[in-house]
Image (tube, rainbow, N blue to C red):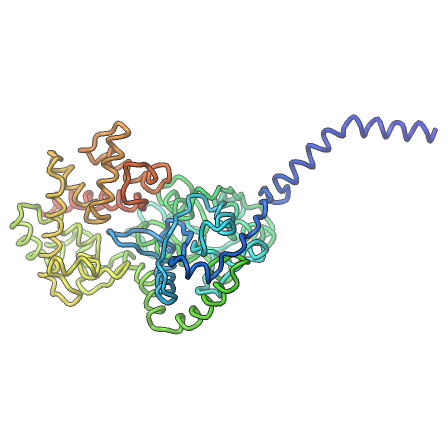
Length: 486
């Protein structure tokens, strides 16, 4: 009887051993508890530390194309982390080279294999990551926040009315689908938050090819409802997507640092020594102010001129009319640009240090006779002059309405990026002389690696959705202004 029982057990085991093996393989390969795969750890290359970096004369930074790490804005290289590391490179006497990484899933491997020396991608310092790479001392601490869309008609609502229609407590995340990078600290935080609220959060893990800013854009456009990013990223992106809410915090403040190979201890020590001093300087505090506080410029305007009531658009209408008349423009169009840029505020300092009503970058304003202390009429004259020059850069566009849109895109992003989009449009069988749904489409695509790495693209990636939305918003407002104030 005992022999029969053992024989029966063995038969059952052999019958189902294939199923058992497959189950174990799936669990190991896909991490049954979290739905995430176990990444293969890479071994850091030896012999590539500070002395070798100094000898070759350059330090290579692996960065993501984002508004906190590295990007090009109105023709200028920018990014909070980029500017910090540019100062560090000057300190140690080497050039700074930036390599943008298309897939963040690969960034630790690229670092350890020597493709770069430092990672700059708003990287949260976690215990899991420290098993594979090292980190500098943290240079910023920030919490994670939920990105959600404001309700339709939010522009005319009070803050209290808006709050009644959005999520205001983490417990409300139960049964909500939230899209995040599957190798991010956001993913881990949402897993823990499930336990805290005692309910399921539908976490949709995305690959590293989809950035946090891509997901913010999708929330703004209504393609998805929720994502999570660090608050500093959210603050910058509210500058471009004013219909997102970023007020619901879901974590304590976490540490952000630069990633370094474990085999580069001298680089780490030198960077930490310099960061410790640099973070106590006024220039570092100004940089944080420039990127994360001045980004609040596009909050809802309370101007008495913002709702098309009364007899004028702004108290500067006389100057708009006078300058537009010199170039044969509709004055309502330049007024729409001024509203988009500054809400008609001639003293504001905006994103990236842009100043004044027309938001000239510090390197550009003097070319048009505009300085931070210039009076409103001079600012408007300079803005009109630049807009007209941007208009003249597109003689091949015969349709005046389309040419206006090319000019607006150039004003926002710089001529070179729009020329890249035009070349892409031609290559992909679209009309290079038509903005709507043609060059506009390729401007949006310039945030995707398969497009900005194309041979016809000469100026790299851009956050194309920002520019496309800028053109649409300014032009639609212009049409509204024109219908009311002829």
